Length: 271
Ligand code: CTP
Ligand code: MG
Image (cartoon, rainbow, N blue to C red; front, side):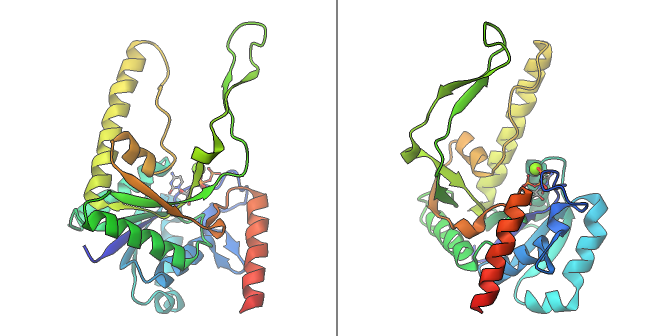
């Protein structure tokens, strides 16, 4: 229970960022996003071991990075290993969970699922989320915690019209009250056993509904989960939200990358 594990999702291709290399291996201020994300996890002093999920093509490069002497020294106190991710982010996380099962990590261990793309996440925030999750799990209050930030835009629910006069247009459906909306960040931290259960339950639902859809001649109706807490919600598990940090922004587009560069410059000036 005292040990917290991290699964670091780094197996994406970074299509929207548009660099030649997969996003986690792109450098920001002379250090890859992957290394920076590991710097943050190690500096939080809340994680004893991190499993990095990468694609088959990048496995060797990832191994080289984590075995570099300077990095080993920088992450002293946190073990790091590499495992093979999957086609979608949730497949990568599931592969990480299987790795933890293989390592016989106890079900009441705490697991933090983090995006390599959120490489500037402050270590203090990581610790805050892990502490909150551990508190909830220890006292059986809730099964995990995630960092969130307020939403600044007005969010619309839309639907593309498939018939009628506006056929093909995107039509407004609803405007959820902003006070109830939050943007989810990572790391998202849960009791390992509960997260495994939520993932297995979701996979079963996907199998059933896609079998149903193919009988009905339709396409797969369930959307791929874009975060881990959504699987916990679907499984009816209680998860709390704690204060996130704007520095934990996900680097997705070229604009995000430029903003991250500026933030990094500011940090270096302050040091
Ligand atoms: N990720 C992963 N396995 C996948 C897809 C994504 O581990 N099959 C990881 C990414 O490496 C990233 C995080 O999940 O750290 C968040 O995903 P995203 O920002 O979408 O990154 P990419 O999928 O790489 O980017 P894009 O969608 O633009 O291709
Ligand atoms: Mg993606």
